[in-house]
Length: 250
Image 1 (cartoon, rainbow, N blue to C red):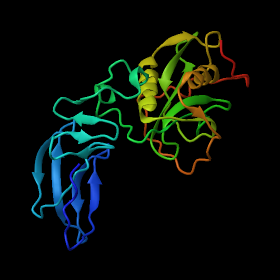
Image 2: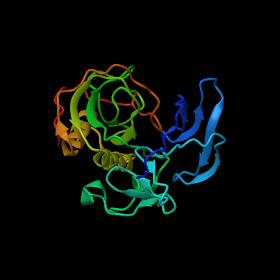
Image 3: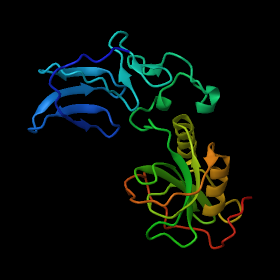
Image 4: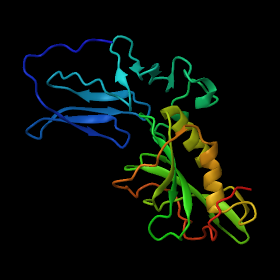
């Protein structure tokens, strides 16, 4: 890693980033743009305007540009933006997925997980039936993905992306970024799968089974502060829920 060059005059700049946290501009104290850049989805820099010769090395979440190699340092290994993959194997092996070199499952716009977030069971959100449950991955007080199981076309139920967030956190696990990405992909891949509702599963049994099979260490559920209701692809959450309090798995 290169040491930043010392400059006698320090100035404050505010970051303007895209939805992934990739810096696109630096704004000075007067509100003027002091630096800006454009990147493709894999983090390759397409253009840069840097009239003040600022050193802005932050790239995709958790990454820092290495000017000597052109690679991005990503804590435990280096990422090559030209290839869109890591140059060394995942240090946790196959626990992060079958491809030990891939970056966010080859979906850099759909998957972002720089910190190692959480997995939890959530009770019903606003306008959802009592006793409803979903399994969630992300930041409890920020953006997250929610999945559950609901009645579809009778007598079938199906897995769906639950768009109604904000319920009480009832069970909770701390995870790593690799575990989060793997679990989120596994849940996303199940969307649309179906079985007999009530016989095969209800929302509670399905959600609890996914949570119990998820990686991570169980901890005391936190009390959430704020919730962003922005995630989700389609809404089936009003179609069905548990009518019992058992929550038992098949």
